[in-house]
Image 1 (cartoon, rainbow, N blue to C red):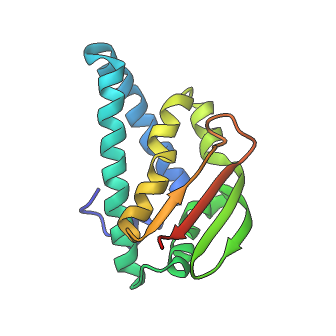
Image 2 (cartoon, rainbow, N blue to C red):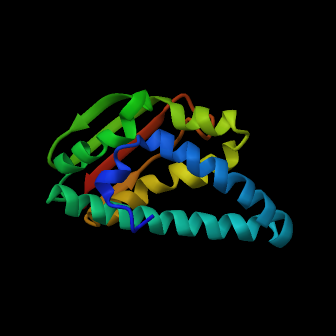
Length: 161
């Protein structure tokens, strides 16, 4: 995927990309898990997804020409495309971006495909790593996710003191 220009990837919403990925990766992970053990395969997939997200975060910062919180909010618009996320803003400042996701079509997608457990690996794990790549001086905290059964996801990005 690194050979595809980022602007070309953005022609398709992230939700659609995740569905395409899940329909391929899901059965592949299941097969590999049967052959080599679920714990090992899921750990490898998790680690690789996190590394991909870090690289994507760095590429996002480069494409928007900045790595501050305001620029990050602009870049995040792609994740909400096609109504993928419904959010409530908690705080937006130069030092902090905090919001709650009250509806997550990513979670709905993975559940509908029978991949709820893998959904956290393929999507939720990206959130902190994306920021690590975008701006390592911003820390990410989240205590709950819709994917994990909560009523909402609580995102909190803060510039480290």
